[in-house]
Image (cartoon, rainbow, N blue to C red; front, side, top):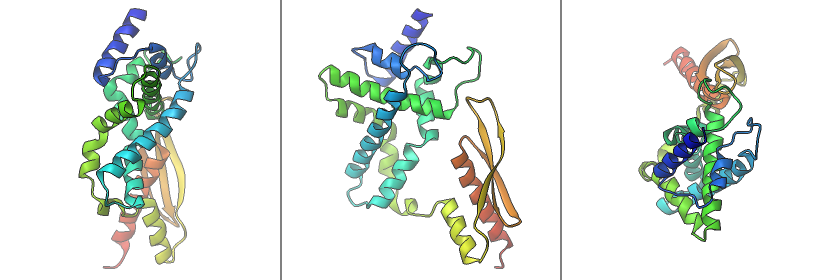
Length: 236
């Protein structure tokens, strides 16, 4: 088992194009809170979250000198969301390396623990590079740019300043003299470590449902569906 773990860590370093000087940082980053032995990755996740947000802010600031705070904040939120980070984690194979107490044959971990592990991994790289005397900020920035820089460069500020569906729905309801939107959970499927949520958006008797990997994403999609329903019923 240890040889298999070491082989997986070697493969991860190859994907990252980064070799740890002290693999204790990597082991900690890959230890889920449900694991029964050793230090879990929650402290590293805390550091990695702040590190990723700062690094992305710096990349946006440098890539778009003409943008104001609004679109930069919006794009950063889109790029470092749970779904985006969990997809990055899957591409790196963290779902196969993350140590936890769930059965070996259980389905892969859900988006949240994978996103947390990705942030913990960035923190581990930062601390390892710093301990080795390298430029830790630059090391992390190279990794984040490799993943997101193309999307940052091609993004348009005008599309990012548009209202999100939930805000748009609230404003639409107020403009039409309708009750404020109410969001409720209509269902949940999948195992506990990888749930999918069904959320309902309702205004009076009108309602719409949507499923997503997170409640927030499902609420946003439900709001968008309800906006379409209201538009279809409104006189042209």
